[in-house]
Length: 367
Ligand code: IPM
Ligand code: MG
Image (cartoon, rainbow, N blue to C red; front, side):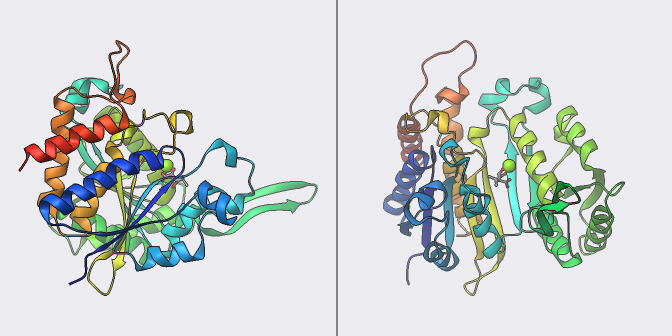
């Protein structure tokens, strides 16, 4: 039997340095748990533009389509701000999502006990928080036509289109209901049916899909009220399903509840491939953090936890995923902190590789 394949796209900014720690973790699972992956690496984002004049080369796209899972670091940086829109680093990521048809984006927001003090909200509001945002990722206003900047009379007009078909709503709704079944069986759908026809359709289709999941308690909320409720009492939620743009906003909001963006992983899943595994791309929720890139300050945990999600969702290794997540929890409980997790009182942060060392040691100790 051949080993499962992993395509690694470190990208820009802190991407390569956090991914270097993930590679050590992958090697650990190979040597200590017999989980050997065929790992290859390629370029995405600004670094791909520098080399090929495009943020995602066609060959890289083809390799991503063929891989059992893709692991991405981060894309973007200020040196690319003035590039034409069509070749901006983010376009590489959006092309991957679109062409791999990764319609279901899982963004957990989990508050680690050791970091509950870190949230800008009161500790009792966030301690023990564990919610999952399912964001539709391949449609909506991110991709709808018409789009562009056009001349209209004597001025220009910028146009983007919010567009959802019933089948696009139904498939992401199903993936959210499936997840809810494995969790607390509670799903909240967020849209703006009060002002948007696409929201009315969203609500109708989600309600229709819910008939296949009688055990799941479904509720609906306008997305603005949802944002308010997320900051008021986030623990009322289990799984949230929402569209591409609202999901972008709400997942950043939810991420910050937990104290640090540097902690949160994500999985973007598509339809099953011939081998039964879903098309999948895993990436940290944080960006490329150009201000601290190359200094060994970045927190590798979000990227490491993204690999844990790959173990769980692509490779059916839920126990090993839990092993890795527990190792991270252990290290945090022991008080280890990268710079992003230092409170105003300061202290001595560990470096990116120092955090990697500690997580590897905790993995060793788990055996
Ligand atoms: C995200 C990011 C991306 C998005 C950007 C980098 C294109 O904000 O993954 O949430 O808007 O989807
Ligand atoms: Mg975002």
